[in-house]
Image 1 (spheres, rainbow, N blue to C red):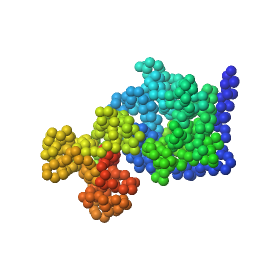
Image 2: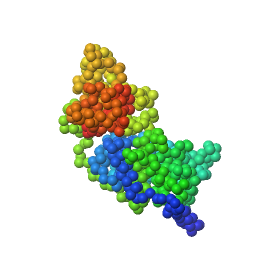
Image 3: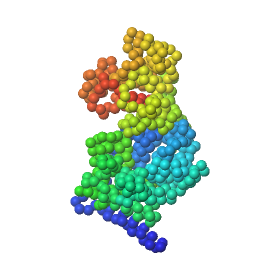
Image 4: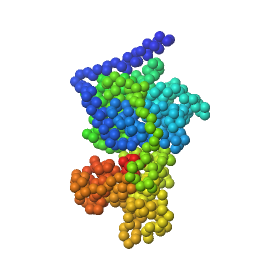
Length: 552
């Protein structure tokens, strides 16, 4: 029996690794092209995620991609991220989430990628919760998938959780995945072989790719080797005519990336003949989503959250390059970089010239999320501000990112962002008894806002983009930044925008400063100075301000 199983295992592995040389008229992507794609994506990531924070977007995946890319990144970038991780973990007492245990896995993967031990992050063992089998599998296949990837990233010993009703083992997670394989050879988030026919379930390319990543280190087990071989064949059949993959009928970069990473973790080239359709390989398809700026589009027409996509596209290209160069795969981190421990000083001390009243705001509510902002382009900023109590949602749990903002609401956000305390004063005739009177008074005292004339503030008035830029620039001055621009510099900064003449003369200096300092995104074609800013846009402006002012 052992001989038969061993023969079966060898056969399955041979099937997996066979045929790695492209055939026919197919032209392989050169290593130089692949290297350049990774370098462009890294440059984009460093620009888009200047201050990585714990979170699904603008955090762990950006750090993993950069740390595994071989690109030279300042060590301080990783150190500041790790400081934010420690602060977040301490703030929540080591409890990252009550139900979604993939939150632990994602953080384990990221800290492991920068050479840190996930068993001691601010004194907490992040691997311990993964010892609870029942809680880990609560969220469907995502739980065991990412638990295995995280634990195996640096070969962590299986954690023991004395409080667990069912103590997990690696084999239990492996068996859970193998036993959940669908008849067509793939996996679906909540499907099993038993429910596949009644629920009309078929393989989902995203989930199948992730399961392949998780099982990649267990192909020495005959049952796993057989399951993996079936899944690879299923994905080959499911691949589209353009070399890509779809989920729920929509072809996306993420679907293609997850399958590609699954193949790379198995040691199978994304240019394997089984993954070439009409002369286009899976690698060709992923590359087709990359923009000139280095990021990646969610769909071919650019819809969806492109930052989330860019982070996945980036680490997918990194995995493909590592395979081409014969290096350890993305999630085999025995060769992880080593980031020196911080020097003991706290990050976010602020600039030398800041007003003494300006304080760094600590994380007090880590992991705060809003369903209606989860896939928003500004989600990193929204969640980072929410974690510090600078912004909050509505009673129904929403954030309403596209809702406009009043002058009173803005005063609350900007003063909270700088750690300024409300003033026990009534500065304007129309703010007496107003819920934000103390915050408005503080913003006025420190020169961040002014009235509208006749002793009034108009707290319910809507903030426009040029007004927000003016007030944020005033806040930047309070943080120790030089906001003085001469006419020539203002003109040089704003003239590329087609509509800059529509801005008020008094606002142009402040707009120029915000664009130059990165508080506003200068990749936009127009300023739209008179357009009402949204809650999401203000969150992004304040997040960018705190970053450049060294207050994160």
